[in-house]
Length: 81
Image (cartoon, rainbow, N blue to C red; front, side, top):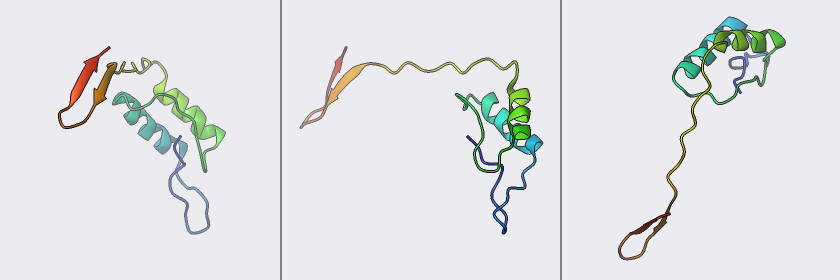
């Protein structure tokens, strides 16, 4: 979950919702988002802007890891399941 930017010298977050939403959209376009929300400094406006930015994008397809057993000794041994 992204922060609304970095805190300023007063500990407040100045990043506007459109900026945060643009970054989240870029990450989602590159397949880097599983779920999104907000953290420090995020407001309901940030969450709404992020939701609107990714609306209609397909869900990220999760890769299924190959199931193998790998052992190491003097020689590697890989056993496929």
